[in-house]
Each structure stands twice: as C-alpha cells, then as structure tokens.
Image (cartoon, rainbow, N blue to C red; front, side, top):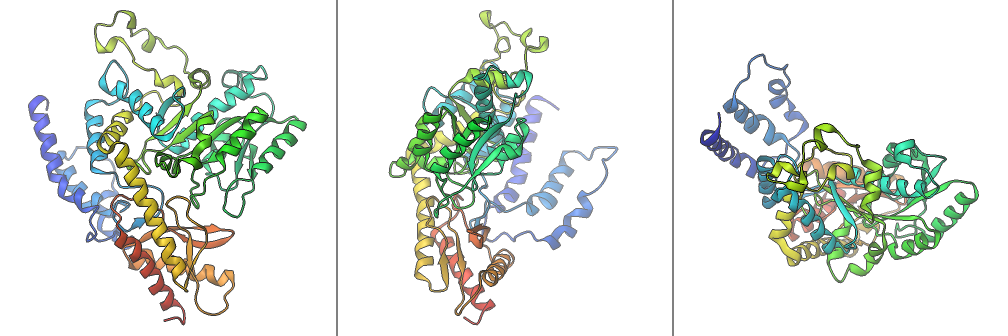
Length: 485
C-alpha cells in the first residue's frame, strides 16, 4: 500500500482510535485494576504469529485490550510521579514528527527546529545563550550527558582524555542526599562508580548544605581525589526543594569545580518572574538539564542538556568518523537535503538515530508562548499552596514541608498520642485506599524518615475541585481508620 491509499488508511485508523484515546483522560473512565488482567492477558500473551493479522485486527486489539488498560496518568485526579498525559498539541506534534521526520537530521525544518526549540528553552529558563543544547530521552540520559562533559573537563585539566583512554584516578561528584538517583547511575556509567557520589546533608528544608560541599571538596583534594562536579537540584523529586544554587555557584567558582544544575522537574518555574530569584545560580552553571515531558506536558521521552562548551560534549561522546556517514555528505555544495547532515547531534550525546524531539517542544512552546507557560506554572504552584493552606487549617492533617514548588508533603494524624511508626502504618493504608477506592492517585515519600502523602501538581487536567477532593478523601479515610470518625 502506498501514496493516497496509505494516507487514507492512516486517517481512518486515527479516527477509529480517537474515541478510545479520548476516554483515557476522562473522569468517568473506569480505572484499570490488577483483576482486569484476566480481560486482556490471555489474548495479548501469545507467541509471534506465523501470519500477520492485518491492520484492522491490530486496531481492534489496541482499542479493546491495550488502550483501556494503560496507566491513567493523564486523568484529573492523578498527582503521583512527575509524569503527565501529554496535551493535545504534544500528541499531534509527536504524530507529525513520527510520520514526517523519523529522525532529526539533514537540511530540513525538523533539524532547524531541534536547534531553535533548544534556544527557546534556554531563553525561557535563564540558561546562558552561549550554552549548547542537545535532546535526549529524559532526565536520566540528560544528567549522564551533562556529567559526561564534567568528567571530560575535570580529567582533561590533569592531562587525561577520559573518553579516549579511561579515567586516571578516583573522581568525586557532590550531590545532596535528596538528589535524584540518576546522578549515582551516571557516575556508574561514566566509570567513576556510584560510590563516587558524595552524599551532602540537607537542612530542615531539604536543601543542600553549602558549607558541607566546600569542606568535602577540600578533604578530597587533600586525599588526592579529583573533584568532578557539584550538582545542585532545582526542585527535588521528593519534596520540590530548590538547593541554594547561587551559593553553590560561589563554591564552584572558588574551588574551580564544574557546577551542574539538575532542573529536570522544577526549572520551568524559573520562567515566572516572582520565582526566578530562587534559580539565580542557573546563569552561572556549567551545565543544566530540564525535562519538557514533565511540566511542559510533551509526550514522555524528551529531556534536554545544556553545556557551556559543545566541544567538550564532542570529545566526550563522539563516535568518530564512519565512511557510511561522512562519505555520504557534500555540505560544501549541497544540492539536496541529503547532502548535509545538519547539526551533528550524534556526536554530542549517546544516540545516533533519534526522533525529532525539537518538533514537539517547538509545537508546545509555540502554542503556549511565554504567557501560557507562566500561567501553567502559576496555576500549579497555586494548587500546591491551596492544598498546603487546607492542611494547615485541618486539625487532623499535618504539613511536613512548606511547598517550594508544586509538591505538597502531608499526613493524617488522628487524635491522641501516636508514634511515628503508627502514623507511618496508618498513612500507608490511607495511601493504599486512595488508589483503590477514589479517583485520586498521589504518590508517597519520606520526609525526615516519616511516611507522607505526596501529590505533585503538574497535570494540565487537574482542577481546584481535584485538589480539595484529595484533602477530603484523606480526611474521610483517616477518620474511618481511626476513632476520629
């Protein structure tokens, strides 16, 4: 099938699936449950067929057996992990990118949008214009790419090319105990080892202790350990805390150590003028990351790394020349889009073939504009403040941290004396019943060792009624579990 017939079939297939896809985001769509596995597992769990079943059968199985039983992270009551169901623009742009630009290269509009959308993000987030950006699959790889540049810079300063020859002697990365675990995984992949990440303590607001960083660097240098990078987090996954980035930048400058900012979740709040001062250190960072698939609500699989020197990225990640690539192009006399690779992102990160993620980010930012992004962030910050105010006003609820971004950590506290162990058990059950019996699905974490309920508001379909509904549900379940009822 090809040409007009194939285009028509694509259109028909999208139209057939649309009602099923739309239901994913509706309040009244039933939540999939573990017991539902019997409804789909027997039909899906089968060996590779000898003969294909054709498109019509695949569409039927997608509509009946797959779409209805996916995770409902786009529904209004979901406030759990820092992921989203994408907005309409993100879905459409992702489809367009998949069909029109299976990869990001060549002299094409998608290749141009790869670069331009990265520049738009830099402007939005306060990342210096001199930094060079590259997309990846998300925060895990984005941190790996940025810290790969940090490792390259640190070891080159002592006359070693770590990407070519391996590391020479132990190195250290300094990150708070609240930093995301991908920092340790990056250290492992980069050959430094997970134990090379020095766990810096935090204050009562879960922010990194700046003095402890300076002390650790001095002690490591005395012991012959090479400082590779200081990692400041612009919105921790646990509580949304923002490390003192400007003060960490001071330490990095004074000690000549690379300063990296992990802004995967929270950095978008820098676009709001009243919050921008908390992110002042970003302008002084050597590398910065952000995940558009979080607060910008693009489809999952889009992270961005910005590094002050693209040549460092090239030395850290280049594949080296290959006849099947370099021998194909003639950029000095390009007469076809296939004569020039365009911006050579393959040598700046860990992927060769990669989708045109910039098309998707461009589309979302083009739709929203600066005003729309700011309105989105303010709305979600307002939701967090609304819930925090409600928690403070309820005798049976306890606020465990003051929200700095859009995460709220709280717990139910029944009347009478209770140990922390008892409160942990009760709130674990409250969390379980929320997911089982209500449309509200927050996640949980621990603050100062205590189990807490942890909604994070970045879902574009959440409303004030959903924020209030979660508080009401926690109160009702807590009262049912205790003598408060």
